Image (cartoon, rainbow, N blue to C red; front, top):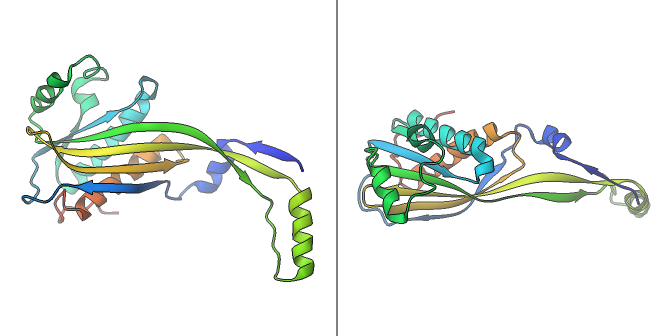
Length: 209
């Protein structure tokens, strides 16, 4: 049986317009008060080689927060790309609170990797013996192929400032997005809507389509 390998481009042509991000787990702190935040900072933590991803993820999430009625800023725009790399644990919180933000959303890229998936020939059995046997011969003798996909595993936390109290945490998988731009846009909308659902953000300020 012959096997061929198809890399990202062909697969992406078939996935355009499909949702590529999914929340896999969520935790929220017990509610203590109605959420009223005046200024939210967005900070993405990624590998140095992924600076463009940091910019897209921060910008889209901050932009979607603004659309809900919140004031939001990005850490990249406020501090630059290397502001937190050399800081100690005790120095980070004062630096963030100095921006007058009363909440912080962190987006951490836990892992990104390429995955190969084998795709069998398209075979229809038609519910008959002859159709089944014919389909098995096709599956054995015709070419299958591999597609190479990108998989991103994210963790997003929402902290109140200046206390640094964790109010929300979610893990999300993004699978073969059509572009980093589209992944950032989809991810931002997905997370904000979930935060609204969980009561972390104000319920009357949902992002509209």
